[in-house]
Image (cartoon, rainbow, N blue to C red):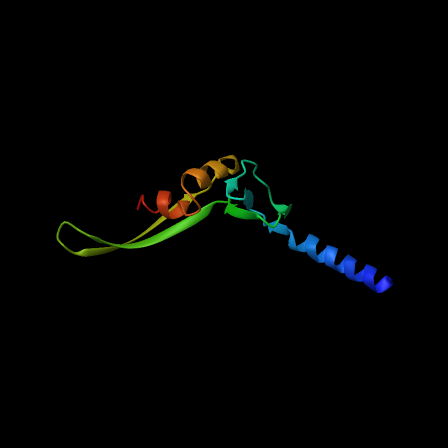
Length: 114
């Protein structure tokens, strides 16, 4: 009887641990449950997720994106340029950004400026 009870306890503990996700400092999370994006933004910490739920993590800290480009001049010579941009995302805008642009927002919005 004790063996059976301990096996059940281990199984319940494993199920509980596997249904948790960690959001690191400087990130927020948004749940996608059965293909539907929730509008609630989860701050850094531990979040419970179910079997049919996925957690999308988005960094909200300031990101320094550097791009190295070879640009042609008027004379037809190539000029090497290194451009840097600093950006951050407001945590309240994360669901809207994921819904309208997607998770590749950096390539779509920021790198297209370059």
